[in-house]
Amino acid sequence: MKKAGGILGIIGGVFGVFAALVTLFIGGVGGAFQASGAGTVIGLGWGGLAFSFLAIIFGAVSLGARSRRVGILLTLSALGGAILGGTMVAVCMVLALVGGVLATLGTKPEPGGTTLAPSAIPARRRGKLEKTLGVAAAVVVVGVTGLLAIGLASKPGDSGHGSPASASTPAPSRMQPRPTSAPAAAASPPQAFQVGETFATQTFHVTITSASVVHSVGDLLTSKAPAGAEYVAVAWRYTNRSQGPVSAFAVPSLHLLDAQGHRYDADLEASSFYAAQIHASAKAFSDVNPGIRLSDGDVFEVSSTQFNPATWSIQVHVDGQDVIVRFPASLSAQAAAPAAVQATASSAPMGAASAAVTPASLPAPVASAAQATASPRVPASASSDSQP
Image 1 (cartoon, rainbow, N blue to C red):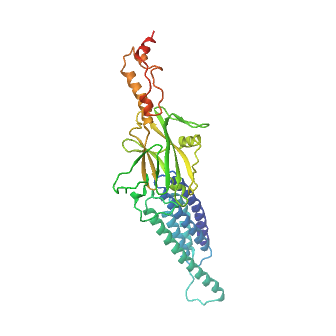
Image 2: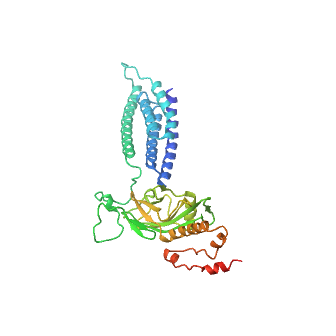
């Protein structure tokens, strides 16, 4: 029964290692896409990996142990992995827990008062080895538990980066939008930027280069917006202005904010096609070295009737803070032109509806608000003479 318990402990520990690696992979992917709770998943993966290794060690030692302490330590390792290792590791730790119980019950202690024979000297040495392993395992368990407690107590969104940061610098003063001689007010609200402007944080220079409303993105592989929806395609770039590499999990990320403050995440499929279309250079899991500038693209699926560039904005999450970027006036003019044409057509009489909306009377797509106001209008006589 003791050997069976040790074998079960080894098998449970090996399966726990694979489950912990899968948990770490899931947490890493979630952190790359700035998912909430990704830091907690990563912490659970490291905890499961540590306790799985302990289960393998104690399972191997319990095969030849003559003390119940090794079986008890195997049981505690299985319980620790089940509690602090996540769901997948907990399932695998069931085998290690059963193995620990069998190893504890199957080990028969040596009777007291027997004469020490020469053949018993190796057993005493093994007892000292077991005691040393027990103390070392207890230290490892306490250390891992403390680190996990600290990691779980911290905020998941406050991920660090590789550049050295000054601890005495307050959070509001980290934004350096423009070099100026006058000191910035401490209680001033965050400044909103426009598309095309570059702003600086402690780690990055960020620029939203363009924003457009399209119905499909991609070159070879395309993604089309469904009926009643459209794509807001945003191209942007960022540069590491710090003195050290920055982790891929700490690079800036983009979101879309509506008039009520609801945050929209990017469409992963459409964003990947758009990034290939604009030849983006951003990397998925590589660090950003100092002085390196990368470009990227994000696509957001929005309702055609609800999206309004005049009241919606782009939110850039960088260095633990949110920066607001406003859409250009040209995009607001493009969104307002079809609505004005539709309103004119709906208010015209039934007989004049075809004359009110004709290809000749529609304004050309404008690139700016100045071009929209300077576009020529077709005289009323010309449209009336063209009718039969």
